[in-house]
Length: 418
Ligand code: SAH
Ligand code: SF4
Ligand code: F3S
Image 1 (cartoon, rainbow, N blue to C red):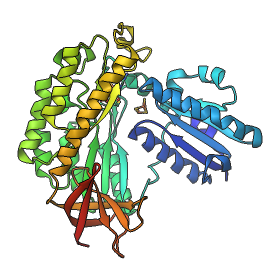
Image 2: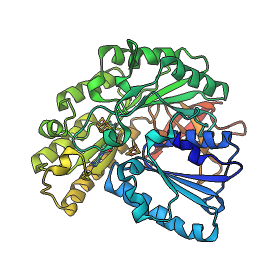
Image 3: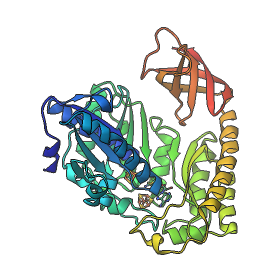
Image 4: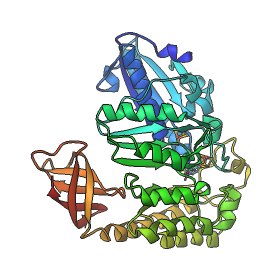
C-alpha cells in the first residue's frame, strides 16, 4: 500500500485541504492514520516535518490555488532539510507525474485510490461527523472531472457505515452528514438510500441526519416520504440544479428536466414552506444562449433557493464538454455569474426573513469570532443563527431559540431554553 510512504514515527504533520467534503473526510482519515502511527499535528506548515496538500480539480481555479500554495511551501524545504511535501487528492490523480516537472521539490504524489484502506475519520469536532457512504461517480456529466479522478461508484457496506456512526456517537457526535457524489443513489444488497436513512435514524444518540449531494435523478417517492416524515432528518437538502434550461441540462447529460427538478422542490416545500433547499449552478456552459441563461435566473426565482454555490463554467481537459467551442469570453461568463449572485443574494435575504418569529432548535457550533459574547449555531434547515452566550453553552449543545431578526445573511436568535 503506497500510503506506507506517509509512514513515519513522531513526525509533525500538517494537512492543507481543498475541495469538497469528500476531501475533508479523506484528510480527517489521513490524520487519523498518521496519528495512529505516532505522528503529531503541527500547529502550522512552518512547524511541520511533513506537509500534505489534498487537492481539487473541479475547476481550473481550484488547481491554480493549490499550485500557488504548494509553490509557497518551497522556502520551508530550504530551511528544514528533512521536510517532506506530498500532493494528494484529485489534482494528484489528474496531473500525476507531471506535477514533479512543475514542482520539482515535491516528495510524492498520491491519488485518492492510492491511500488504500484508511481508518475511520478523526472527528473534525466533537459533535458532527462526515461519513462517506459512496466513493466515485458513474454519472459522467459532460463538464465534470470527478468521475475521471475518483473512479466508478462504490458503495460502502451498511454494517460498516452504521459501525462508524455508532463509534462517532460513542465519541460524542449527534449530527452526521452522509457523503457521496450522488449520495441518494446508494444501494447495498437491495437496501436503498431511504432504508439506509431509516437505519441511521435508529442509531441511538443520533439527533440530526444530513447528506450531500443527492442527485435529482434519484428522488423516489420512498425517499421523499422519509425526508418529510423522519424528524431526525434535517429539513434541508443540497440539490445541485446546474441550470434552469432543459436544452443545457440535456447537453450537460444531467438526466432530469427543469420540471422534474421543480417537482422535488414542490414536494418538499408544500409540506414545509421553510424547508431549506440549496444548490449549485453553472453559468456560461458552451453555447449557452441569453435565453437559456435567463431560464436559470427564472429557476432561481421559482425554486427560491435558500442559498447557492454559483460557478462560471470552467473547461476541464478530458471531459466531453472541453471539446465544445466556447462562444462566451471570460468577461461575459463573469457578467452572467454576477447576475446570478445578485439575484440569489436577494432571494437568500427574503428566505432568511421568513424565519423571523420561528421557534428553532439550533446546534451550537462555536463562539462567534467577532463577539465572544455570542455563539453561532445552525438550524435544522441549515441557517446560521447568532445567539447571546450563556454560561452553560458549549459546542454540540442543542438550544431552543426564537428568531428575532436578520443581519446580513445571518439570523439573530434569542435562546428560550438552555
Ligand atoms: N456530485 C455533485 C457535484 C460535485 S462537483 C453533484 O453532481 O451534485 C461540485 C460542483 O462543482 C458541481 O455541482 C458543479 O456546479 C460545479 N462544477 C463541476 N464541474 C465544473 C466545471 N467544469 N465548471 C464549473 N463548475 C463545475
Ligand atoms: Fe460530477 Fe455529475 Fe458526478 Fe456530480 S453527478 S460528481 S457533477 S459527474
Ligand atoms: Fe471533490 Fe474537487 Fe475532487 S470537488 S471529488 S475534491 S475534484
